[in-house]
Image 1: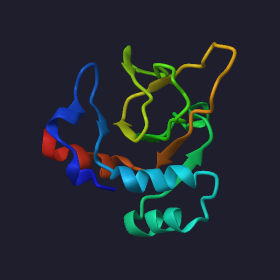
Image 2 (image 1 turned 30 degrees about the horizontal axis):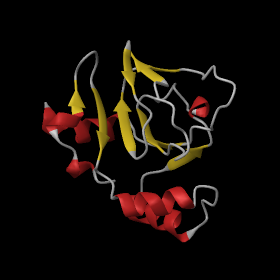
Image 3 (image 1 turned 135 degrees about the horizontal axis):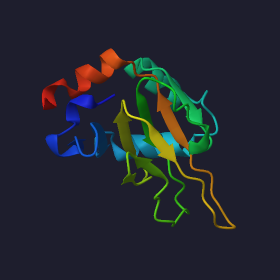
Amino acid sequence: MYWSRLTKRQYHTDPVEHIYATGIFPTTRYDSLYENQNNLQHEVWIELDREFRTGFEFKQDINDVDTKREVTALWFFKDRNDRLKGKDITLQGKVIFYQPNHFLLTTSTIQIHKRTNNWTFNRPVIQLDLNINDYNKITKKFK
C-alpha cells in the first residue's frame, strides 16, 4: 500500500491512536477496483495483490468485519449512490465517517453501527491483513 504518502494530519491520538486517511491511494486506480468489486479474480485485483503483498478480504458489508484482530485495517468502498452521512463507526466515542477510498487503521476496538432506516445499501470494505509489526512500522514516523 502507499503508506509512505500518509501525513501527520492523518495520524490521530485522540481518543486513541489511529490513522484515518484519504488521498493515499490514486483515485483512478481505486475506481477500477471499485468497478470490479464483485470480481476479485479480475486483473486489477490480482495486480493489487501482487504489487502490495498485503493479504486482504473483501467484505460485502462492514458488519462482516472481523473486529477481533490485533489491528483493524479497513479500506472503505462506499456505494456511490449511498448519500447517508456515513456515521457508521465509532472509535472510543469518536465518529469515524465511512467515506469512499478512506483508510482506518487502529489497534483499538471499533464499534460498527447498524443502519436503522428502511432502505440500506451494503457498506463494502476491504479488510487488510496487517499485524502489529506492520502497524508499528506505519505509525513509527509519527511518534
